[in-house]
Length: 324
Image 1 (tube, rainbow, N blue to C red):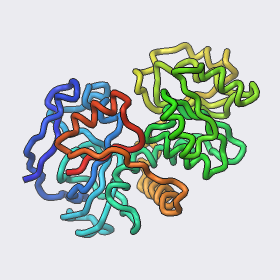
Image 2 (cartoon, rainbow, N blue to C red):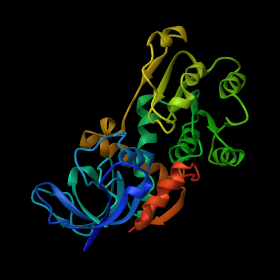
Image 3 (cartoon, rainbow, N blue to C red):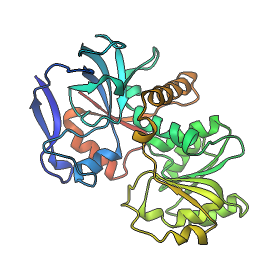
């Protein structure tokens, strides 16, 4: 019998229940997957608490996983039983088995194991669109990355270095700063000891950054805007400290005719061709060794609640993976 961690009502980590579930057979355009590893991300917390409301209860959280295809539905031509696949963006990954649309999964290349794949799909593809599409980062780019020692942050540090950019990171402890620097950050600011705006101005000689990537939200806004050069781009892609409340757009004018965007991975990978291109670009930098995926924490799937407690308590670095 298959099992899943499901939410029957919004709340804290204690609402994550270990349920027996019926999976069934794949329908038109679907495949059945047996999970080998499941990624944990902050969006899972937003699903659990109701910040991102779900259409019905109970539901299984989790947006990414890796496993093998055990059955193929009608109309699926490019996948077969036994294929190793991974995905991000299809809710319901906290399960031993699941059905999923075939066009949402990509084949895992040889040389990348399930745990690595599950720990990098959401975060790695997020970094890919942030650095290659939302703003084209390259030599000469100076960027600020908040939460530089988190899962997305550590991948971004490495990828930005690979692209020849100057990455200024922020983190809350000296240990986390050391980690970011070890992964390729050019500078790292411990925001519990220093004002990050002042340090950014110092590091950039008063010029500011081309782009700021902010997954923190309320606590770092609007200070993040003060780190940008005129016409700079503010990218808000998460809200670990709470959402940015309504603000007056005139602030963008006052601080230098700034641009602001709120991108999501779903939009950047909505077309099958874009999903495949994004995933292959990620697999490529990982296989080359330019980006190493740090799966620093693993938990049994049953203990998803503890994984959430540690994530929300900022006790984790790098990627977190649940093992069925």
